[in-house]
Amino acid sequence: MKRINESKKLFKVENSIDLKELKTTYRGLVKQWHPDKFQDEDKKEEAGQVSLKIIDAYHFLVSIAPATKESNLDEYTTTIKEAKVADFHHKSLLLEVTFTDGSTYEYFGVNRKLYMKFANSKSLSNFGRRNIFNSYLYRKSKKAPVMA
Image (cartoon, rainbow, N blue to C red; front, side, top):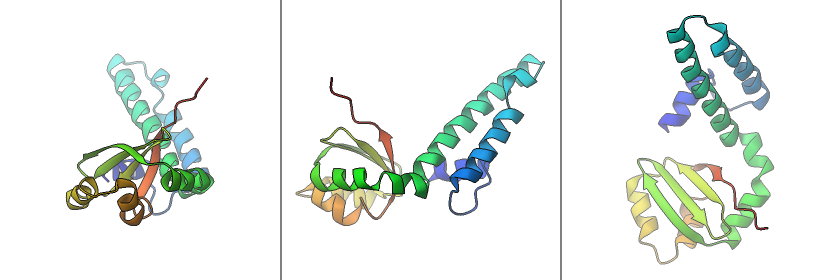
């Protein structure tokens, strides 16, 4: 949740994420903080770090935007219905779940109590479908490996 709030604050996003507006703001910030605009080495280094934060926050916000989720909804639905939970990790309020199809999703705001119920359930996939997968903000964090 902290990462979401920090990213939204950087891009001055109040409520829902509009991809067109986000892209415009991103371009402006990248121009403003491009390291080549600065002569002083300290400023140049600072601008480089800020640029990396801007790029990371942009890609993160795009990944959780409603339009992005909507365009990937069929793939996500197939994954949570057909694939089983292969692995999972919980840190703070972030639950990362890897499915047997190779997809990995991050779920934001999952507290420790719910995580413990998930981890101790007879069927991780069933419990996740009922209580987590469609109830929490999520994003695809890793692509499934391509088989040659």
